[in-house]
Image (cartoon, rainbow, N blue to C red; front, side, top):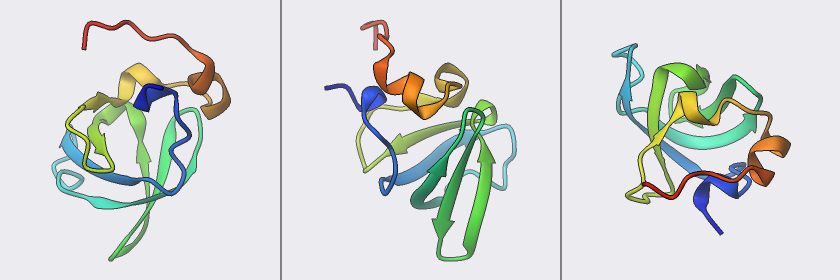
Length: 86
């Protein structure tokens, strides 16, 4: 099963790129996901991050996920088929 089709709650997220330079390098655990945002608990507290402005990795995996490509409700994202050109 692809990482894109798994539930992301309790996974570790690392922001690798963002239009907001303050988010780059943010690392923490995903505690909630909506269609447009991820709620992340880090050492500095809880952050609400818009998916469309970040690229990120989950659980130390090498796959970089572009947030704008996964702008779906979690229940819809889990059932969606993604292209294999990654």
